[in-house]
Image (tube, rainbow over all chains, first blue to last red):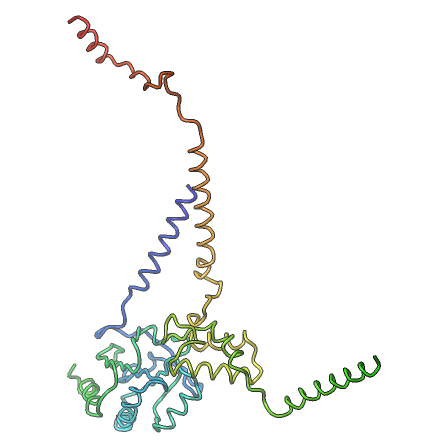
Length: 169
Length: 159
C-alpha cells in the first residue's frame, strides 16, 4: 500500500513537472509576463514600468557572430526612435561573461539599455532558441512580433516597430 | 651525517625562498588543470550535456577564462560555483543542489531500489513456500460436489 501511495505521489509530481515544461513560449498576441532586467550599471528595469511604450527586447551575446550582423542596425534604430521617447530598446545579454559583453557594447557603440540575463530567467520566460532573437512588445505589453536570427537592415527593424506607433496593428 | 643535515637544511631554505620569489613575481596564473577541476562541474546552457571543461565553443572558452580570472583573484571553488549559479542559474551545476524538488533526484533512486529489493524478497519468499497439497496419486483433487453434477452422474448410472 505504501509503495502505491509513493508511486502515485511520484506520478503526480512528474505530471506537474511535465505540465510546466509543456507551457509554451510567449506567443505573438500573448501578454508578456513581467520581468526585471538589471543593467550592467546596476539599475533595474521592469517591463511593467514601460507600459505605454513600445519595447524592443533583443537577446544577444558577445560570442554570437550573427548578433554582430545586426548590432549596428539595432543601435541606429535606437538612435532614430530615441527622440520620440515612446520606444525603448532593451538588450539582454544571454549566457555571457561581463568583460566580453562590455567590450562588445563598446565595440559597436551600443547606447541603449543593456544587462545580463541573471539566472537566465528572462530567456527562460521567453524560451528563446538561441541568439539573436528580438521581441517587439506593444504599449499594452502584448507581444506583437518575433525576429528569430539577426535583422538584416535598419528598414526591417523599422517595419516591425512603426505599425505599433501608428496603431496599424 | 652533519654535512648531510646541513645540505638538507640548505635545500629547504632554497626551496622556500624559491617559492617566495615565485609568489613575489606577480599574480599566480592558475593552470588548466585547476581551471578544469571546477569547469568539469559546470555546464554551459548553450551547449547542453557537454561539461564546460571539454566544450569547444567560444562561450565556454570565455567561461573557463572567467574561472581562471576568479582563481587568480583568490576566489575559492565554492565561491566561483556560486558566482556562476547567481549569473546563470542552478542549471549550470553538474549536480543539482539538494533543495526543493531537487531532493527527488537524490531520494527517488534509492527508494526505488529499496522498494524493488523488498518486492523481490517477497516474491522469492512466496516461491519458496510449499506448494498446495495434491492427492497422493498425483491426480488433481476431486471436483467439488455440485448438485447438478451429482444428478448428471446419477442419470448416467441409470443408463
